[in-house]
Image (cartoon, rainbow, N blue to C red; front, side, top):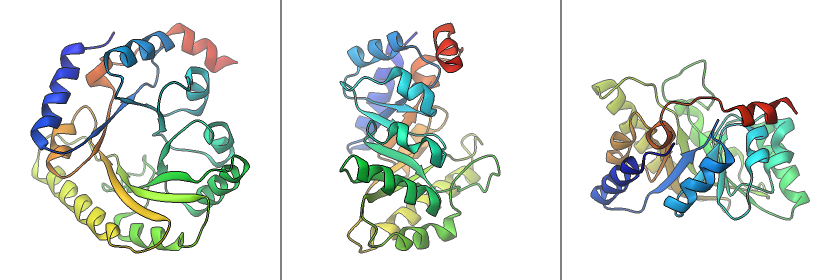
Length: 230
């Protein structure tokens, strides 16, 4: 099921923020049929997948795809030729594998550095104080291009603590935007999900990742279960 009225709400919020914003539809656990329906309703949206196996099962080259989940190095080879942007670069060994696999396809892979603003052990990402150094450590590395930051902030509701984290994330984004290196073309701040995307827009996000807003609560469909068992 797709909540068409929510698509209108999202478009309204984007219009109010007054800048171009990319909507990434988080399609984890959604069927191919639902993905196709969404693309008919909102062809300008990008599809984002958290799981490598689901992405390869659903992949349609007619659509734009991002990888938005934690990425294991041994799974990079399965998606490197399918995604425009990887949102979850957070360690050197992952960068090295991305470069290795990208070379096989003659491409330079665009990536976002994931930042763990809340210091949550259950989430990936570099700590905020190490993000700039991580970007700088990739200077001169061919086959990879850093295009911004991504963060999954804690689900705190609209409160001063969350807004402070968003302000710090925006400051970090501005800092990294000033790094002058050939493979760092900073233009994306990917932050904000269904519970907080309007706050994220207030603090400069220009990529938002929406699942529940578009599809409701996730229920694992039988056809995806069968794919996962292959």
